[in-house]
Image (cartoon, rainbow, N blue to C red; front, side, top):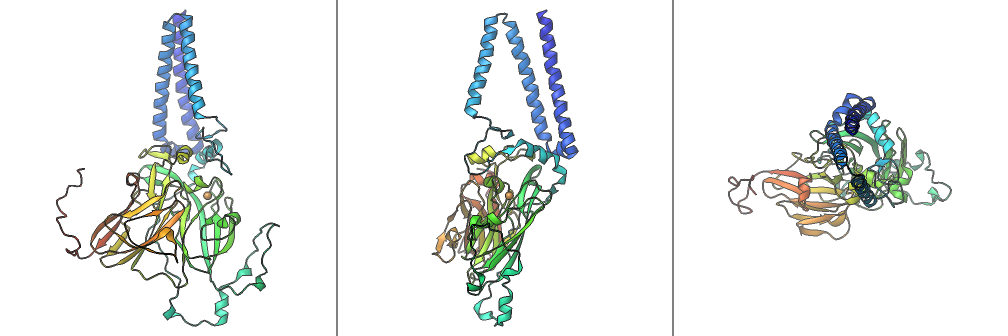
Length: 482
Ligand SMILES: [Cu+2]
């Protein structure tokens, strides 16, 4: 009799496993069709394998308890399992709500970093509505020209033309609530800056971190980082922010170049499909980060929502031959480095500050083959750090920075002859150097294991080699060895 019932239990376990597997696969199919199945195939194989192993171990365990033929031994076994479960669950913390990952709590002012389970399902259900972006990486050559008119080329403007640029009352007034008293415009001196229009579209898209590894990036204008905005000191920056209709989250933008609540974040929160316009005056020169700042801020930044705004001083920056735009960032994925398939954002890893990927311009290899210069060129790089956890020890292998604008401060003391410069999370730097010798120069975060996580780029310099600068045999070194 006992033998029979054990067999029944074993069969029931196997049937339950098969039934559960079919249920999971059909749920995924119903939610997101064949596309979602294909994105999740690696996870499915792993999940089914784990299910098989658990089913078998449950089977073994039951057999073992049965074989002991002694009630006290059976009770002791059950005590062991329950005790172990109690110990493990307590050390993981309390589960607060249905979210992914399950055990992430927050003491921050806003919403915690875990993704509510319903958002995960909504994402799967809408997977076919998301735009697939072929290359998420912003081209580092994408640097707009300076708007500063240098002294010698200034053409005298008539007063009318001069004032035309400043049309402050052409827009709806910004609703600041009852608490703010606005300064009477007529009592202020004439604004001398131009109005510079900036269009930012917040998007949630699918793109590859590396071939076969897909991530749901959140961006400004479909690239990471968002566009480099270039204005000059005193300009009025008029930002139009549109949140794409297919998005699942609200977004906004906080400009570190702005002075006022939330750097504009307070007046730019947009729901999917919504558009808002706001203005700020670029009061201080420098290279500043902008980023999405709706709760949970770190979650939005860790999906790729950051970029840089350059506020040039009134006199402009010195002329250079080449300018590049680079921004470091981190990606926190549930799958470990190199794991194929669709990667879900991992809030626990973000809270712990352990990114799977560290990137220059959105993905590993994002800068590859994009940056070129000739021997003798003066090069300037605008380099930012979206973080969200780590400072960058920015360095170019084989170069020395002639000039560093530390922490991207313009108007303060400059540094000269610098090897590695620090870029805080949510900060930037400007480096300038002349390229003297042809070859490949690798950009790194000198916390060098991060190159293995994706943080590298190459500046290729062409031209004649001067043997007085470096001389030797470049042909025989075997790079395969260590
Ligand atoms: Cu956002």
